[in-house]
Length: 538
Image 1 (cartoon, one colour):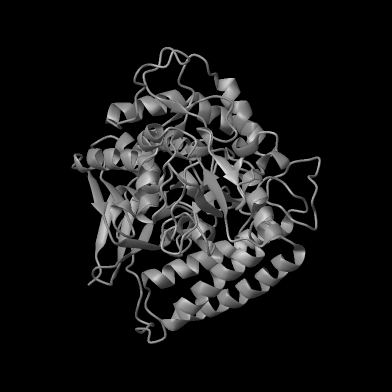
Image 2 (cartoon, rainbow, N blue to C red):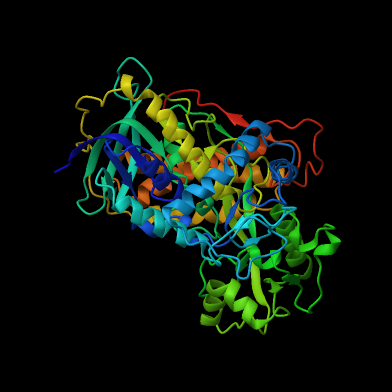
């Protein structure tokens, strides 16, 4: 039997953005935080590097802003960049107040007076400004925020809940355009429950799972982007998909990211013969922005016909490596790679979705009552290429901003009255789940081959043809069979893939993360790619 729930705020997603928003709202509000698997399944838990912020006396807001603008290929919205950076110190202080165990400077660093925590440097940054918890920052932040959320009786943490679609007034045939909540699959009961809410927040992460090789966990399927699009929200800049240059290359490693902080601490990228190559592509070498490093690796792999390149930090003292990168050291050791003695085999992998649901400075989407924060959103911060460690910062700054906006509206928005239950009367149990598995595999393979690090018109046309056929097949399947997590994710992933392809075809230039052989040069004017839903598809 399906159930009905009512909350003041429904947060779909249990990572850094979702938990931060829930914790910055007052305790008299009833808040639900949904995780479609176990609570720790999101990208936040696996983030290694840290959080970029202006924290010591040698750094400035202007320097951080300029670094971000330079990395963004001319497409960053300067107002969004400045807003994020100006609020970086207070966001970090809030995390410290929550109890996040950031690594301290011991002894204190004389080059960074007035700040007690260790700061590292990553690609694109002109200063050491990455605050971290060794090389497991995401896990430290997530565990701390989750512990705090569990202490709050007004916050319900619900696992194994997969959002199917948003409930909006147009969907119900009601005059207006407000979001009223969501239909959510309870994976334990198999029923689709109804969640009514005064405010709904999408904090579902990105869509890197659209690619065959990714550093992201299995749940990064673009759910929030797809649901927002179907509900009438604009999306922007979805052609910019960041490929992390260095993921561990090993048949059993699946998707283990080798943090950029290794290069920040002097690691060298090398060919199989031990030759360094990054200096041929950018004067910043290994500390060039991620798009440049990823393309350089891709170029060398294709030029030489090799399966991987190598990241070598073995010239640093063994104690330094084990102290600063314990997670990477232990994980590589599991595959008989001792990073204190030998180089790490690495390849690029899809890592971050720079575009997303268009929002304002408070995380508000085009649909009243609906917010999007974190990787799901497009704030204008990242432009054509996200600078390292700005992503977690964006989560905290916009979560806090969205919560303030929700508070300002509380007096005039009531919990919606009883909403209709999910209608499953016209569908049956599927006996053809092989179709889901086949389409999932095909989608991720042609996205990798045709919409990857280097693109062409012909490749994009092939991808567009295939994704439209898949969308038709998936829609037919969705109309006839009961929903499952795999079907919901495939439906969302295919929709976001189609939006990515359409966005890439619209950009007739190479800029940042979008590189095409047919338009290798950058146009003089930088414009966002904005897609607008023509009809409500809910």
